[in-house]
Image (cartoon, rainbow, N blue to C red; front, side, top):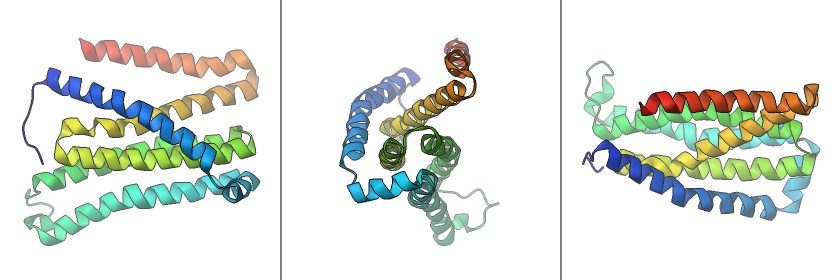
Length: 206
């Protein structure tokens, strides 16, 4: 793992550049999966979108969250960090711990969005979107982990999965508001979130 610590401005440029490159690639991957999922899988997914979403969520948790748990468990077994209170975690293990914590947080956002797609999109579109969203999220988690192991600033390509989850969640909130009370109410939670996000950004930049 690269232990060089560039100044914050340099790290910020690297993060933004990584996201700028990864964003279009993730969008193309999403569209590719959306259109190329086998028809048989789409038919099964469209017949029961909730079950389809649950299956994809299980795959994502297995490949991203559980692997993080296993990475830490293995390092504990074969390093002095086998004593959790000794403070002997090697740097690579600290990266794995941060990856696991961040993945746990993002899994919740991803899962809510996934089931929202199942509930509010038309069945065939829901099945395609669930598959595409899940594949991109899994790949982004791996990119985040691999980049983080090299150096924290190289985790940026994996952040596109977070952006994807946010966009899906905004769409679900919009659709819920529309279905519950009409179009103006669909825009309300989205507008409130964007206002809070802008306030948080201004505060962080001070």
